[in-house]
Length: 160
Image (tube, rainbow, N blue to C red; front, side, top):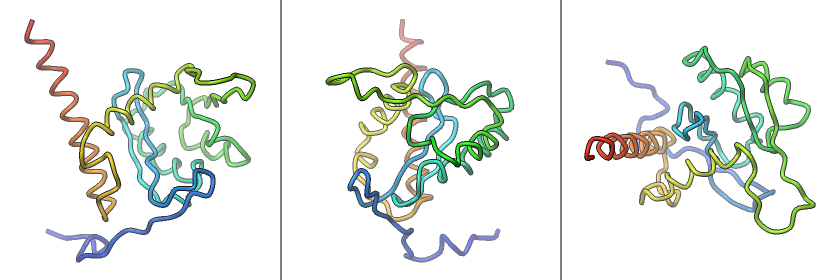
């Protein structure tokens, strides 16, 4: 059995500072299906731009899910590098922008699906705050949370 040397010992993964949100820590780049179930996840330092951090995750999602028809992203994924995101996804890319003219809270079409998934993850104690030091541990706890969600949905459908 071989081990990756980057995960040995008590070494912690780097964290960054997102100047736009004024937050220190990490960013979760998630790909979900239309039901909100996670099909891809990548965790980067907070100082990595959204469009740069999602490219490796989109390549992996595209490799596993060849039938992917469209990618819907928020405004953080637009810019000059949008062509790189499009090439990684190998599917039509649609940017859902927030309207500055709208006052108050407004649900944006399709974008709420990912936000709902992050809400489900926030209900898990270990994922509510950034407790983990290793990226592999963070990804493992997200996967466990999604497994827990799926098991609850399966058992709920068999109770009736």
